[in-house]
Length: 271
Image (cartoon, rainbow, N blue to C red; front, side):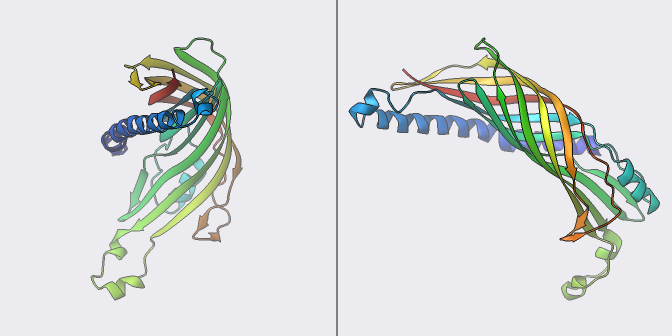
């Protein structure tokens, strides 16, 4: 079930995000180049290139990450209530942007894990995680065809456990009765703060260069890896709404991670 949901999600993601993203990046690149061209013709100071001193570069990316999760304590709590153990929740699907300034590289992204599920007596437990992250690195490579850089970053994430009591939730048809219907359905969550340390590598597959007036847009497909260690610096208490729960699963999720990365890159140069 999880493999099918991952496959279906990835297919939908490619159709709904990656293809439109390619068109969006190209459109934004053309628009930015047009603005730069208009600005370059407006004053003598602009013609002297005083305002456009550096190349503008970056990429929109899809990242698939493996970072082993530790659900031992959570599964023990579920087992105590009759639920089978949840499957491992270690694959992350991320969308990110990179921003390049000379040798400095900045990367920000959002991501989530597919659902892990468990069910007993028509009550289903569903678990997954969400994250946002920011990384900064420095390219130590001298080759224009690839980048190699150490990086450090911060990561904000949340684990979400949803209990769905379908038997009681769906035993009335009247809207008013459903409002106060007694069920075991609830959503619990745990906030986390982490630090990421690692290294990244991107190989740039060059695409056809676009020329607009005095601007050159070099497009590429960056393909690469991220390898590092996630330090779960702070694991928060489990909560339901804003109410804090005691004695919840508290094991930290520090672990090695590896990411496969592919994207659509650009570099705008003024000729």
